[in-house]
Amino acid sequence: MPRGWIRATLVAASLMVAPWTTTCGGSPTATQPPDNKEPETVGRVIVSPDADTIFTGGAQQFSATVEDVDGNHLTGTSVTWSSSNPDVATVDATGLGTGVSEGEVTIVATSQGVSGQTALTVARMEEDNLSAGAVGACGLTTTGQAYCWGDNSWGQLGNGRNDPSNVPVAVSGGLTFQEIGAGHDHTCGLTNAGQVYCWGDNSQGQLGNGTNDPSDVPVAVSGGLKFQWISAGDSHTCGLTVSGRAYCWGNNWDGKLGNGGNDPSDVPVAVSGGLSFQWISAGLDHTCAITRTGQAYCWGWNGWGQLGSGGLDSAVPVPVSGGLSFQRISAGWTHTCALTNSGQAYCWGGEFPDRGELGNGTTEPSAVPVAVSGGLSFQDISAGLDHTCALTSSGQAHCWGSNYYGTLGNGTDDPLSDVPVAVSGGLTFERITAAADHDCALTGAGQVYCWGSNSDGQLGTGTNDASNVPVAVSGGLTFR
Image (tube, rainbow, N blue to C red; front, side, top):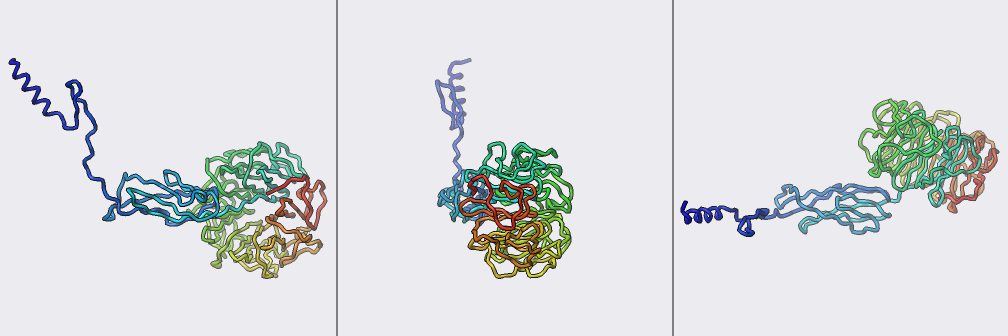
């Protein structure tokens, strides 16, 4: 073969090498072809949701839709996220916003210099740091340590034992909690990381750990969900995730888990309807919650009108009648009470037609909300077995309904009051919780006082003597 023909062939081959190759020592080396396509121009960035409210410690996932100048959706375009005030809320690279402190911020998404934004309000989460169960109570110290007192038949005090205690005992495990909820024979606590632990009776799966075995120490609720709120009922438990979605577990008689069925569950199941709530309360055989817009919904047994819907039992959330807007709600045994944004108390239900637990000046039950008499403005309310207690805006405690065992705390042996009566002692409180036959309240200085029945030491005074006026819980602990 002629040498010149070989050279010509090599030259021709070299001309066939793609223009994006380079040669090294005479050999072509492939490189990535350049992207000669002009980048599409961003015309608008839309951030969703348009506006939202979360609690401190809560989270909201934001998303950004990027459009070109003609309104066409662009895919694969990078977006950066920022918060107008990271001290109020932060946002990460994926658009997940997290509440830090109370306030309002603007969440901004930017692509190619074009920005879209949405408003985010961060509200302070109401910490339920004192809770009375059927015949006991639990509270959180200033460091988040849980202490409980009273009946301990099922290990609901969480101290690794089953004997009652008439003084506060520390819950085992060294966990710290931001919220605690005492049910009938079980208790649950919510850690700062949003993990729920429960202890006590588990015959209906109310501990949520995938078994029906009782535990006298805290066990983690299954499912890996992150919660911002919990409430323990008679034999079921409910909680709200950081996005406001409701989950319940345990006994499901009459549909009180709200998932559309009647089968019990020993792990959390989502409440039907896809509603987002800011408050939830588990009662005896029903559950109630308030949406972020103040609408009250209830589900479960409605034998005495405790759902407030004027209808029948419901295994899914049904709206409470009357069109009222509420800020908080409390599900008792067979009645429910709630506070409007102005502090007006309304109650409905009532199994006991001779107790006056609705506080409206009668002893008749009601299937729809009725206003509590007296014109008082309240900041906190709690529905118990057959009585109710609330705190005025100045911290004065008032109770109404049955007064057996001195549960109204007004120093009398009157059997009942169908209107609010002031609790004796002149104390002012920040939180109040009503149970079966006793109540407890927390002062601003961190002292807990209880009154009513004390058969199992549920007043926490070191004795088993009942009291119809507030008495201080023993131990010298400071609760928050």
